[in-house]
Image (cartoon, rainbow, N blue to C red; front, side):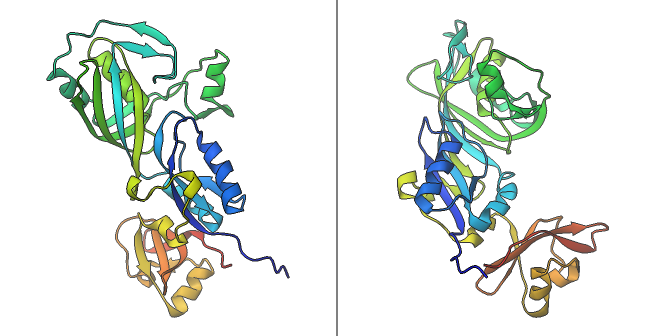
Length: 294
């Protein structure tokens, strides 16, 4: 039997610097925390800053749930030019005179880009097509057809700055929404072009900038924090033992939880045991995953 001590477990909320890729952050965190078992909850573009949630140790198994959490951003939009990357890092590929923009038409156009939308992923994105990331293909000058995907934008508020061609924006959106594309579409809707000059992710679900730390002072939060965005079900005794074993249960055993799940199942401590979801006719529940004991 191995006597190797268990590695670190939990989540870390990093305030990512510009010019770092999400992979860079993970690689550096592995060195700082002394474990290779680290992943992130969703790519944050290199030029963007802000919240990047890392799963460490057993929390890496929970990342698939964190990837589905909604996101919030603060950004600045520059009207009058389009770039090859939809942000300030790219080359200007088109321009238009948009000096006539009025303070009333920009918020109206932004409001029209809220709700349920179909969005085509940009070529400069981490999405994979036939096993290759789009941004890799874009660097080779290759453009491929991309299927539009449903996204939801709950909030797209804009406000003017002293420069009539630069507007601040606050965006709340579903996972998988490309804020660079929103800015570009907004420019077209107003009769010209636009791109992002700055953007900062301010939250991933319940994880916010208020608790984010620079990578050099990374702080590991308990494993239970990884499911703070889920409804929680508490069990004990024989039911807790069956949950540890990954048993399919009657929903009543979890107190007839509301909705389809997933639910975090915890016991005293609280200690996270598993994540459960509905099964078949809905009268039973099954484990989406069971947290292995250390």
